Length: 297
Image 1: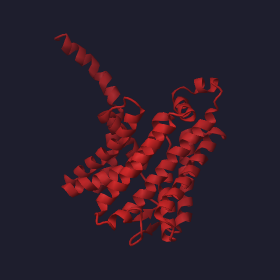
Image 2 (image 1 turned 60 degrees about the horizontal axis):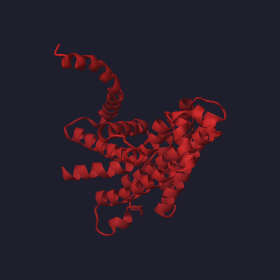
Image 3 (image 1 turned 45 degrees about the vertical axis):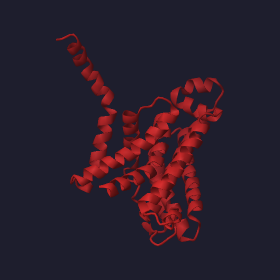
Image 4 (image 1 turned 90 degrees about the vertical axis):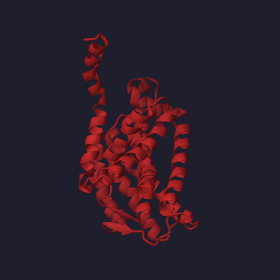
């Protein structure tokens, strides 16, 4: 049981990077960006290809980040310059990335078995794989939270946050909202690609199909984090995303332990997200009942 929890925590830490990327578009920019399902594979493909060519694994993660930035840039340009709706822009980029990812890898999947990955440093110290992933995951997640907390406190960072809240007010202040939207999409998909690169190294392979359902997993982690761990300020929201991703992975691990078929996981995730998103509506339905109970009716 302890081994299962360790595995869930290690995987949750890596997926929390993807969750933070999803949060930037979904909550900050209020855009449902489906580019995520392609950019996570782009990050994995670039990192895997680079590692097999002898490039340092950490440099490979940096290249993956650049690939994610490029994917977000394409979506942003489609949306802002060509006036294509954000949802459709993300879908178009996601479809295009399927072919791009195949081009990068040269085949449907790349194995990283017996390759030096980012976790090899810790494994060479005698740590097992899960412990190595947790340590490196904490380093990456802590660094990302620190940088994002600083960045979104700067003038341009505040402009990105304000764009999602009130774009008319932002434009009235003389800020180009197209620029802030593009920048937000680039940062989001850059982080998603980093998550994809680390996940690929953890599971020792990159596959062109590994991004299917990633947007739903990211949303589930966001919702669980916000519901269970609150959203008082920006820093606590970032922490809640990490805890939400870990909690989601623990729930999945426990559900599998109880005997749910692995083929039903996507259905379970979709239902979880739907219920979590509908909680406010359930609250309005229960409000009259609560009032009547207070009156003693």
